[in-house]
Length: 279
Length: 349
Image 1 (tube, rainbow over the protein chains, first blue to last red):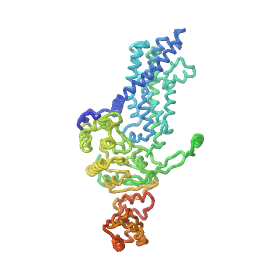
Image 2 (image 1 turned 60 degrees about the vertical axis):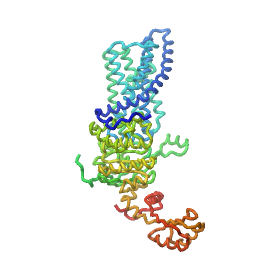
Image 3 (image 1 turned 180 degrees about the horizontal axis):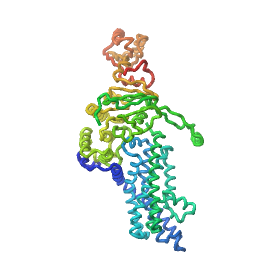
Image 4 (image 1 turned 180 degrees about the vertical axis):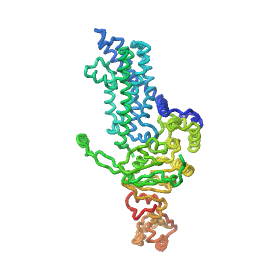
């Protein structure tokens, strides 16, 4: 149980890290403690991907394209959308809300950190590890069994990664805002379910945006959540190029700035208005 | 930062007030539904115009019954909640508006919560904290070595927090609280649940720190041992108001007039308490018989002297042994909480 005891000096002598990076790296370390949970969750979730896969396969028996997607494109979309969606960072969302519910949030408030920034750093730490596991498994299974296609060009592959990172941050900020709501309602189950459902639909994780009813397309196209799944995949599959692609990336960045400003303002307001739980 | 003079006020609150809004829900599910449709709120006055001055190097016990407003005061002083009215400064900063800068000056430890990351080794949490406070590596190493030494942490550094016993966890948490060498230390029920020897070591360590480093300590605790060992000054709060602010010894002086005479009888005497009760009907506050050979007479030493009690008892009963007990701080506090003692007159500062 006990590992070998290092002397006190063993911890010192290490380099000083920028503080939010340190939070992120520590979160990564902690996430590795849950790597088996991560594998388990991803494997279990694959049922969902398989069901979608076969449904779409049936839909494609009579037609070559649906909503502008060929079957090889569609199956690539489904599998990758699933993989990205697995990076939900279930740890940190749960941790944030639990901290509010139990009042442990006081411990984070007495440290010299921007609360919002610290939470996002933590989220990125967890998600990097969980995401690596999820994407790794997805790509592996996808390539072997489900005919996953590579990105249309090296450039689209590279920009896919950029958009994916932006999507990560979008998701992190959105989750953070949802967890702030917990401060007012003091219970998290409902909010968690709601945000998950909304994210699934509006990010394009269930169906590509082009297959949505027109009114929903209109909504989805201007909202930030499409940056999580739809935007990276549109780039990956070459559905958008040139100015249109830059426009989508620009939208993502603009939303990130807005979300950050809202989140940063909202937690300050939240703490003004709300009581901290427990004695 | 210049080291200020010893009598510099580190924590100052004037008219500090906090009102919480609490949902006023009628009982039951129907009540909860009604609250959904038309929410009603009660105002709860948690802290009521508290005035407070704590000087550098002081160690103050902040006590009061459950729900008196202790924790809320600590949250106000640490900048976690915003005051409804009044003013508070800690080391010259407003803790709420200047939360981040204030956080560098203070250390906060809650006995019931842990700041250690649950699934990674303790040393990782400590290293993270060093980064958060941007301690230079050599300073981090020096402080950590001291803490490891004093708190005997060497065997614990590599262990994940979830595997620590409560006593070990509290020691690590204290190290995490002190790593950035705060000027003001808030301890909230720090020894709750600890066994006697761990408790003693904890107090010993905090006390040494206080003596050596001129640390300002604010302790909230229900453990009188903690209070007596660590603090000279005691502030008692009840219903959000300060009801006593003065030295710990002053309390015993002001309320320590209650004494009890414990008498051991040389032979069994079942009716001893009846005899004694009729003898001291006017003079004693209580007469109790613990067993057939033990009798306790509780008196107000301002009205009757223990000597008189002993003399009269010895004349009537086969007294073998006598012991006089003075009211300890413990019984005084218990009765203050219960409301059977009142502070009257000006509390001495």
